[in-house]
Length: 197
Image 1 (cartoon, rainbow, N blue to C red):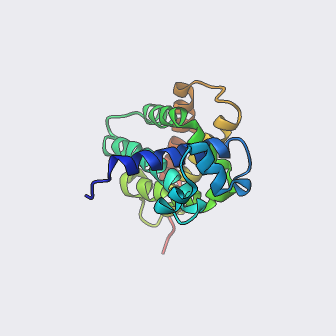
Image 2: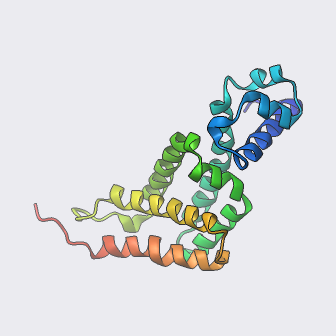
């Protein structure tokens, strides 16, 4: 793994933080590179030493944040037998609460649409690989459909919770996720009819 110079890390962090703060103030499409460099207090030309354009910076910001969420889900998935669904959900929503600005950008900014689709697909793939209960031979509900439903519903639930100002505690959201999304989908798959060939 290539070691990144601490000065490069610091500059990228300043640019990332500047972009996040600007997106929370105005539409992504209205933000200029000059806005970002002014907010970050770095020279305009410095931006181009690190990124070709604002989209590339946004992709890195969101990519880094989503990698952290995927890591949390992977850790939970590896220990799924030891964790009840509401505990799994509490850990996910705790991560969301700690990174609320990032998730608001991911879920609400039009500029983040490509990475949002990528994140949704990766979360679905993760559930597909780790949740054995989604797999039933010749089931009316294919495992890929069930996994995609969980991923899409999870992101929609996160978006609602953030948009409403996080009105329910993390533990309650964990239970809602566990019962309404994950548990309900697994139950639906397990109770679905088997297609006769």
